[in-house]
Image 1 (cartoon, one colour):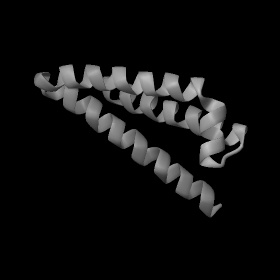
Image 2: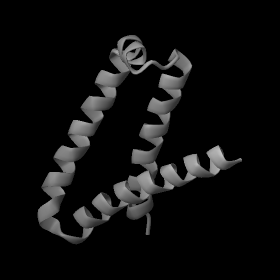
Image 3: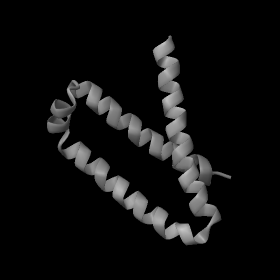
Image 4: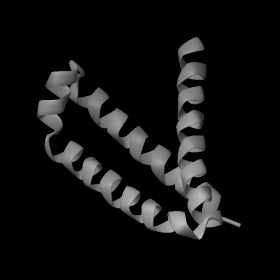
Length: 88
């Protein structure tokens, strides 16, 4: 039970950080350009992480299922964190 609470806390922390970046770009127009390029870079990193999944799973010492689960979790954090701030 303790691990699930800790994992939930990390997930909410990640969502909050992504939401902060998203909200900052919404409030301060000058940051919208930075937010756009941040989204581009993060998307490219996720694509690279998906392409070299076998190599990164071996380097990190994770099983393939754990690596894919972590990758899906990171993508969910970014998506949920961004969507939460844009929904009015």
